[in-house]
Length: 353
Image (tube, rainbow, N blue to C red; front, top):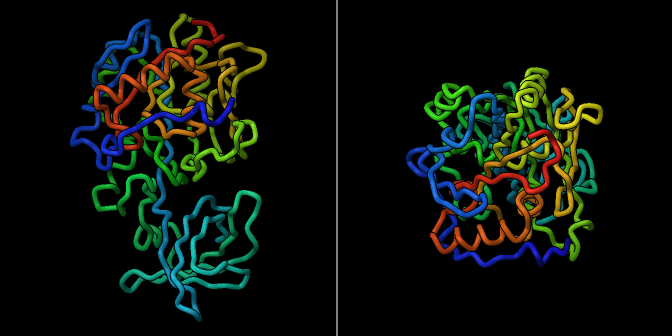
């Protein structure tokens, strides 16, 4: 797919810089045989007993750190991406001068202090290894000195309210540097209404990485270096999907991260089902991909020239989704992480329906 096919015109004022007061009050553009308008609160009405709604229970870390290089006082911004063990993390870094092995950065907030030691050159993904040192447990200190890693397109720093609203209500497993944003629309009332209709809500975990914000710069999407993300799919979720297949009920993915998890874990021997387990995925989904597991998708509106938009084009059909985006712009939907949602069925799913 050519990258310029992922462009579209978006008025800047449609970027949602803050969430709505109520999570499930967001609008939902339904993409079916025709386009229709609803709210996320109406999602249960579209699903019947036996359906499985799969959510991503990753928890966003307060992974953005602001500090100064010891010795020069130069400003440094770190974004922790992944813990490697023994206090060593992969991180993205921004500084006035390149950070070299041996450099140390002091991160302070009040009487709290954290030191980050650079332990290697940038890898192929542009990440550094840094060793974090403090007198407190690192995870505890990050809650005190770290900042929520809001997407850069929001054009603002994190605020106290983001600590709650940039997490899903089912966030459980810490490790993401971005929220699985389709899940931000769910509250406890909506989850209860789904279960009352006989819908199973089942979790997977995929730790969303910084690559989710990276625009595609290559002319062809195939040339884009896809980022790696860790996922886990529990046996209970695999069993729930198998049960849905047994009664001909759909598997609904809440967000592109869930799609990538389920499709990465697709069973070869049991079409439409998944294998439990964990691993890393670099799965790039674009038009032409045949979906093996996911039947319907609830997703936000994504950035132009992004792999997320390519996935949605593949799932719903390029022309159908392009028309939906044009409708969303006309109807003044709110875009991106804190924005509104779209519900659509796959045009290519090969799993039992």
